[in-house]
Length: 341
Image 1 (cartoon, rainbow, N blue to C red):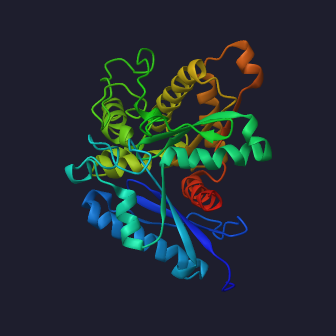
Image 2: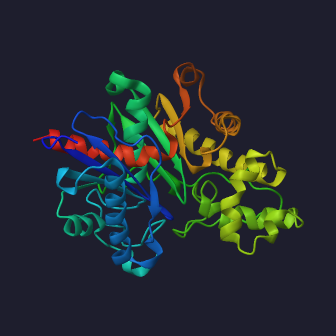
């Protein structure tokens, strides 16, 4: 790398992994694949901050860039959190343990690195990548809403090319929007509970945590001889459900049908108070075969009820580059922070 050039690093902090990317001064990504390392968030803030620093060193090593060339780091984490990266006083999806409540993750990482850190909710970060990737130079003329399905469910709302943050930075917390459960749940299926304590919000259904905690335990009572019942732990089994769905397994497709319906109902709500021109879906749920991705997006579209006028202009699409979107959006936010006086 030229000694006179510089880069920014983007970090997407997840419940299981950190993903990282590098963006150079010409706004070119130096990483063309998903680069992951353990996030270790369940081990507390101290360990997790070190894991984020290790993720940076790892991606810099892969791209042969020195730490001295890094001018800023973009960080995206699940919310709820303030615009400056202070985790909610009640905790958050991946930060439910007491030491995380009210923890300033942005400042802690900035102190650890000695480099400016720019914070975004992970859903906002992914939306900041999804929107311009889809609309290109006309992004400022359009609005969109993004649902990012991972360990939890992140979201981002873009209006006229700019992310909506809200008074406390917690706008776009789409995972914690309550949706109707009637017609979504099967006979005898308990109302799903979210890690945040809500009953019947989107994340309680459309997330890996929702599968592990709510959906898979129920559906295994309906398919007691299923191979997933023999995996030893619900956590391990939940991570395998997507692979079974890719093979058109009946139990797995019932789970993902419920997830698609939940996102469709969320988008229906969004259509009535945001009226976006584009609805994006991303995250691990669509890190599968093209056939499954199209099936899932079609199901989401079927359960999003729009008015005729909205149908004429609405676009439904998968987020470009899928699981890389969060890190790439975080990097773009860090890059833009250096361009603004």
